[in-house]
Length: 123
Image (cartoon, rainbow, N blue to C red):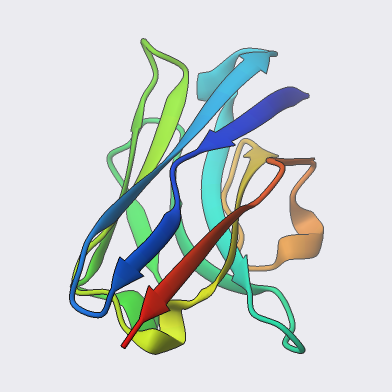
């Protein structure tokens, strides 16, 4: 497994931007698909975006399409989530997650998780 440590997040006005980072250690990073999930208070954890091991293929939830960009730098063992044009409904705790070999949109299929980081979008 990989160990994931997140950074970034915070308070941003609506329409603003944030970038989240997810640094991996342990097992070989490019053996794993990387994803971001989020969880708002009182709601289930939901899929946001995923990227395959190579970084060539990305997948997005409809709600963030054309606003968020997931990427990874395998040389630096780090994944990223660039969030643009943030909306109030993007407020949540964001988690990065790694799954061996292939991505999934189901959070229960991921083996490794970051510690979570709060993103708050203000009006």
